[in-house]
Image 1 (cartoon, helix red, strand yellow):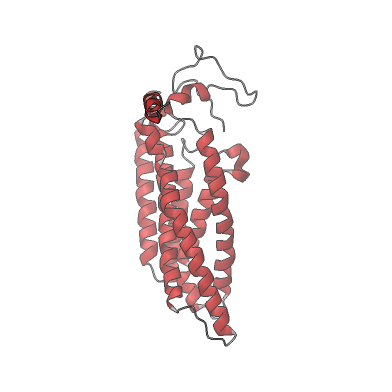
Image 2 (tube, rainbow, N blue to C red):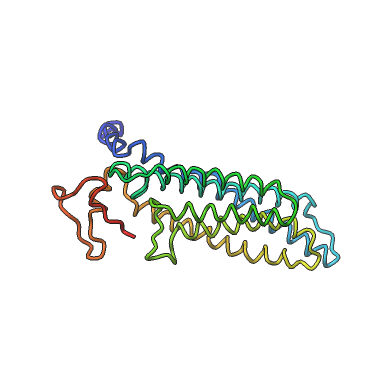
Length: 267
């Protein structure tokens, strides 16, 4: 059989994905295409920076150029921005299109204007706080803007629509992602202290916390893939969320209720 004869049979599969489903793929696409490559670059520069520092401490002449330290800091800044950015993209999609998010509440006539305004302002405040954190020099203001950025992420993540997998929080993609974002914000906030601290206390804290972040990044690859399998696409939601997740039973297609009323969250 000619391979081209199969194309008409395959193309209808693309009709299963609506625009909203393609939008849901923005978060994983950005993570794979941009965030994880930056993670690899950051680790590479961090390793070279440490090897150069240890060599100089021993009195040896390192072949690693001095520029790796500055490059590590610059790439680290990019990593913080990309991690927080991709997290905000995921939260924005979830709050609007997720289970019992803005769209579902609007269909059920339960959407409140105050909640929409509050969430929009929180997104603006979180982004503004992160931008100001990049520019802040005094320790006090770095602490203030780091705290505000972290609080913004946590508040946005607590909104309806976010798939948190609360019953299994210990391997939740959401909780791992928020933890990584907070670690990245903290790392950005202490950069100035690392270079001023001759006792290397902040440097050691930075190394330990970012080793933890690396493990969480690896876990994100696993949990994110799992969530792509668990979270249904738009046309499947009425049937999937109509299932009884405790007894592992589902209704027949004739018994499925409306897309909003009758949903039962797997959380």
